[in-house]
Image (tube, rainbow, N blue to C red; front, side, top):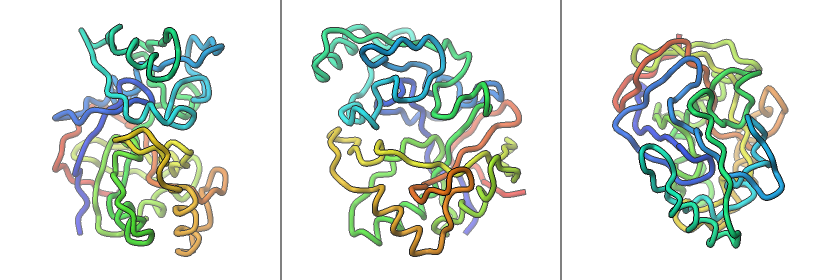
Length: 246
């Protein structure tokens, strides 16, 4: 079946619940504008710029973040919401970093690797659900673009090298595949409850080995779901737009 954009997501606060806006504004210098603009620092971490996610309160190290829904005022997380999260996490106060849309606080260093937009194949999510018998909410994977081509894990043939070289279109936007999306413990946090409720990493690795996957091109890992891509122009992404490999 032809692939098209089924859902779009942005995560202004890294680690917290995301939004499903009408469209995503893409800038080739930063990726999705406003995505992962803010991050909550972990106690004792003093990052003033991009840093690995271990420096921040994210679902990997703080599963409760998965269920936290940010409140905003003039585009900024409100102090009341930050106080609420601090109480939920047993902290007295929280310190945040604001990238000011100069870059996104994505997992790979955008200054070295370039900006990235994440893509999730819903056919792959269905295959994992069918294999395990679990109900799996795609929100668990925290990806920007959800699409469906009816072929589970077909995206891994797109992300067959690192850095990737294959290019594709989303509507009129041209992108280049950068990497398969290697997953961490964040995907085991339930987006509704903030609890680690399913051993998704183990199940995902077992399924991909069963399917004959040889591991991600960058590190050879099997805990892979979706892929990352670098935008090559400025454009707007909307639901229903076709996705086509060039």
